[in-house]
Image 1 (cartoon, one colour):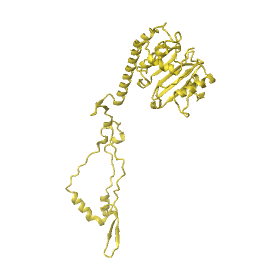
Image 2: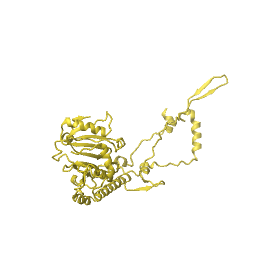
Image 3: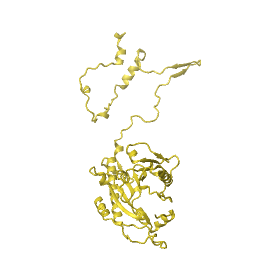
Image 4: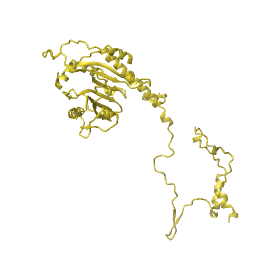
Length: 165
Length: 199
């Protein structure tokens, strides 16, 4: 039984001999063709068959263009609550006034009138929320009832109605 | 391409059958170093077409019987990281198919280790060999997956002989103590059982 040391085995490397170069060449070509096939399949899977070359010469998919914008960023929400106003009179007394939440009630009738006067000539442009207009979702039949009666509640009217008292 | 390769391997014969070897002339350092057995390199091609069966994918590439030829083949074939995923290299003694159904494998098993990350594999040129005085080893297998899986296939499950092979294999792979090499008979492996031995 032939037995060699590790040194002998590694020394023999210098006399490496390829018994059938054409077979090994055909084998290497086969592996290369499979590699290309697998890489193509992977590319098609990632790019959905469509891609472009970016400014650095790299092939890129269009996937990032299909990503929807987040409705809100990841940062903290701004505090929009009105702070209470403090006034100091001549005697040094501080009076804290709670922030006004609305123009409701009889106390603010003038404010309401001023606001209406100011906004009378302002053109308000309403943009539809067309986020879901192109949706491929099946139509919900409950949404299709166009002339459905709805009760609406107008807070201003309700507050200004004397019969309510 | 695959047919071309099959045709070429069918015609396969070893050249220089009567070449000088170191066993005949110990003074001749350019003589070939014969191996105790002939070995065949097999390759499993990843399936690229659903009509391809296992027998279409598993093909013998080349057979050799000297150390010099081993190095020549080693230098010529694609290295592991150039193989497409789901490829396998099998190096088996001539006449043994790299399948557990082969009668010479049927009663045996495998020492196996999976490198989850390909970068965990240590440099390949290591001055370590596995002695097989008992003629216990049938072949070695390398599976190319997301990581690498390497295995030594043995002809039986004699734990006394297996332990030595497993410990040596662990050194060759340069595994740490907590990285366990596992042995499973082919029957256990196919039944997804627990390993019978670990080192």
